[in-house]
Length: 113
Image (cartoon, rainbow, N blue to C red; front, side, top):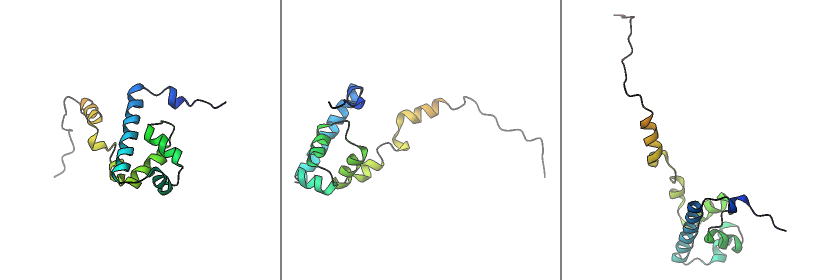
């Protein structure tokens, strides 16, 4: 009896939808390049079934397989900047919210001239 991965059952619905969309987008990119699934699998050193699972948005496909697909399709720069700190609007907002309301110049009683 096969075990069910918690990543399939506990994944929040929005994340599951995002994976399905990502898988679909990978399939579209592959088809636009006229790369058959088997050739894509050969280039990525995985099985055709793994490509099918990736394109279906299966959350159990490894991050390494996803990175390999991005590389094969020419999207490595996008993967590198996916969560770049400069594009993290929420994180930047949190940093700004933690800034002190007032700042004071440090007093330096030691005046050396």
